[in-house]
Length: 218
Image (cartoon, rainbow, N blue to C red; front, side):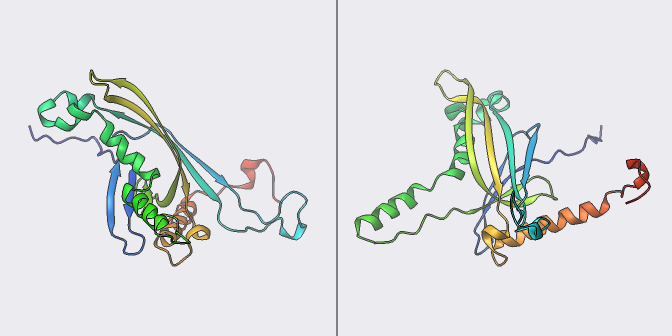
């Protein structure tokens, strides 16, 4: 047998952390299983609101604020079938995978120690701690800078040592656009590429006709 299969290769979604200044990739986090559902919300940034100036009713203030919501499953069952090949899973369950995701919403211990040292030394103004730039990757058409807005974990099964071995992770993401980052920022450039790709995809959609709407024209 040749081992040839017609089954398509299933890509995985995930998050890539990069240094915003150099563009260096710091870490790639791939989801173990792709979520069955991805919820997207776009909040229009219009210049005209209720009771606003009529001349502003058809104007945009900026790009829509887009958010993603997804739930990802993490399961150690496959690895536990071969314990000799996955010692870390045997000893820790899925805590390493969950901890990697949790690192997206926490400053590092080093950053906290540094801020405390600066505070103890009498530094008057301490800048907020900066996180790496996170890119949500969902196929080649969706590579977009994001900020994690909410994160929750439901641990559903445990091994005899109380290590979690099955969990469901819920993640909320807010797309960072040029209003947030600026055009010269690496993330701003990636957002513009994301927006331009949407425009190219929209151009491929088949145009409608008045007849399908039951009218002859406007």
